Amino acid sequence: MFAALQTILQSILVFMGRVISIPFISVTVTGLEHIPRSESLILVSNHFSWFDGPLLMIYLPVRIVFLLAVETERVCFFRFLSRTFNLIPIWRGQVDRKAMRAAIAALKEGRTIGVFPEGGIDPTMAAARERGERIEQIAGHTARHSANLIQAQSGIGLLATQAQTRLLPVALLGTEKILINLRRLRRTQVRIRVGRPFGPLSIPDDTPRKQRRRHFDSLTQDTMRHIAALLPPGNRGPYQDVA
Image (cartoon, rainbow, N blue to C red):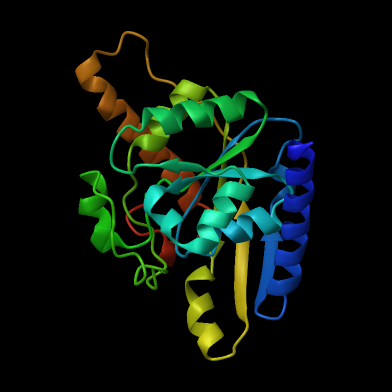
């Protein structure tokens, strides 16, 4: 009974979210034909704004279970989303085995897991995230106004190889302007581009333990190139070497 009520609530919130966003955001979605039916996927996307996750949940025709940084649950809105949509809290900058197990279990149930491989919005916080520190002050880190990709963390390589699930690359552009435009009572043009699924990813079984991190890093960089290919060259940051 509870599961059924939760599903109904999720559908209502998705519908309400789309209706509420219409006066403020004009969203164009391309590549929906690349989303396979009845297949669990790992959705990977750039992360320019706090609005990225909610917009993907609203405008893509698939229920996404995002990995959510533990500190964002201090924000009432994200805590509500986390409880309602069964999002998975994760400690960034370290191997969060509990979050990994929860993500793999959700994939086995046929769900789509959403991951932002860059690990966060603000590049100045990258060193702290990699050390596994909990970001205490998050209010000022709501958007990456440069709209450029940053170096990703290696966690997506580990998750993808363990899950043996295909990855779905998605790119968002324009979300970094939403808050600024809201203050100026302007409507924001947002583009969502869905690429072709790729993978599953793997590393050789005989890879020595000390070299596995290097392989995970390489798979992560390849994943970011799939995302970068969906963005204009001016937004690709360090990932310019894409076909």
